[in-house]
Image (cartoon, rainbow, N blue to C red):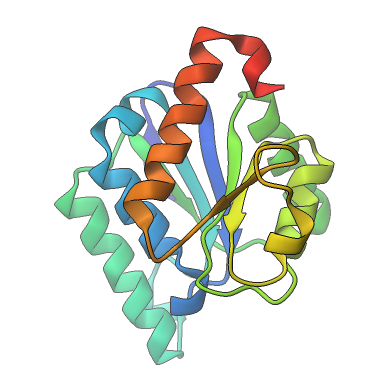
Length: 178
């Protein structure tokens, strides 16, 4: 992994996906990085791809790895952001979702398009508030404001404001997270 979480009492925004353009993990990191109020309230943890460009042979993934490193430096994310290498252990992944739920965190699936959205279903099954793309399958799975929240990856500022609003309300009223 790379990065650290200085204040472990903060809830965690969590995402897990392949590290390619369509999954938009770098878009999530950038929208989090640009929202100083959100950064004060929560940490960000992503599980995606390789951390070291030398381990990837895929040009698109290499570009995304480089972009992740650039974002970490540009926005000085150390202390608020942790990036873990992609996991294939399904039991460990399930435990990650449950751990994030224990922190009163949330799952974000920021893809530009998602055909189905298995991670969305996994997160919801573990009781995590889920924010997922409005483009594709997750729009059918989630009823906005009831079973989760739709976000538009083409409007990242609005998505980060929705997350901020959710976590502000959850801080004021712990029952809101439920």
